[in-house]
Length: 164
Length: 416
Image 1 (tube, rainbow over the protein chains, first blue to last red):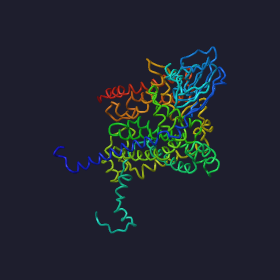
Image 2: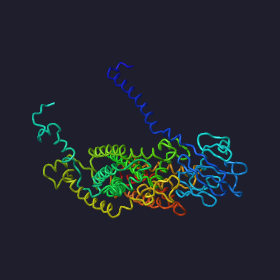
Image 3: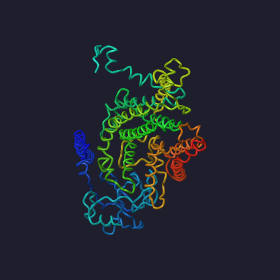
Image 4: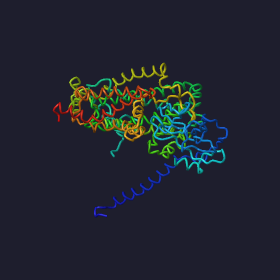
């Protein structure tokens, strides 16, 4: 401390230290108050049975308030490393939100087209046109026979698809 | 403190305690406004009044509105619209005022830009004004979510998604803002809080700051004449009202402002009663459905130009994804007006008609903003996408050449 430091400076700095600690602590509290609630997080899993899926006709499920696209591929649809393979069947299993800004694209014969900004995705969920920066996201899931559980737990099929 | 013997309940007594006479002089009767102004100088008072309409109508809406995803839509479209006495009027007043307030903000802002009222001593007025534009935008967006219709939901989904930062893929930030994996109940309630409390309080604070920043440098005038306010005030107070270049804020300036405010209010209530549909999108009368995106979504008219800048780049360039370029252009558009005083390299304060190159620049900018707004509403396909792309390039280019244009004007005038 220099010779110019007096008692008022000391008081000022003491207050600054107290205020900084309190301010930082309250920021943590405020940040956490905006975090998703435990009940919201707990409601985060969905079970889907793929047994009755019709080839070439995507169906929709809801997971965490988001649409999930499930498409059983027909023979002439290209296979992809991101397919979920159950027996000899190939499935596209993705979160049905355009990776651009989150609109729900609609299925048009062979691909998904997004009405918001014109993005397009092929039957494997890969972005093929427009502003989307990446393929549809894949939800974490595990498989038991033909039953898929979407949620926090993941199985080996998910790990394989994420690599592709 | 001097001892005060006069009763509190007398004019002198109150004045002794609060010094109202002096306060009234500083803020009203000896706050000098140039004579050489036109109706565009009344927009500040029009804006303050529109904001009051928003507050009062908002208070009445808040008494029946329910910020809960299960109740919100019906509380607006059934309770307020059908049951509450004059509820429909308060809703239409609130919706129309929210739209019209942006029209006046744009007029107010581009008046300041045209007459050079943003520079050389008036920067703080411009910056606080741009902060008001940002906070009004936040208030408009958070309020748009409240009726919980399809447009409310999908506007909320798309705008909160912007915070993922494109390729940064910052989903944790989006989920934190939403308070859930998707836009839901927590999102609605927190945006309700922002809309009815935090944003209005911040806006009120910045309005006070905005008025204060104006008090010392004074209002600009049509010729950007450098007025000696003390000398002109002396003339006025000495009875030389005709010769003086200034008038007092109250009662002279405000009386004219109120006349213009009257005309504005007639126009505004005409819209409220006979043409409110433009502020009531039909798509928003479908309840929010997270499983169906409306066929075509677009923001309210006042956000269209920046929305078009966001989506103007629809193809990847040099390995950068279209979305990232769009986000960067969008971020640029949000801040560029804020720093206009610092990239203007002309040392003189002059209106656009005395700065030939700037004048052209100004009107090209106005035209470009109109083009962006028109194409921001159209589907981004075929020719539309290309016009949007070139209008976006023009917008960015205009600000890139702004420092050079303003410097060239100054050189031609011999000021540099």
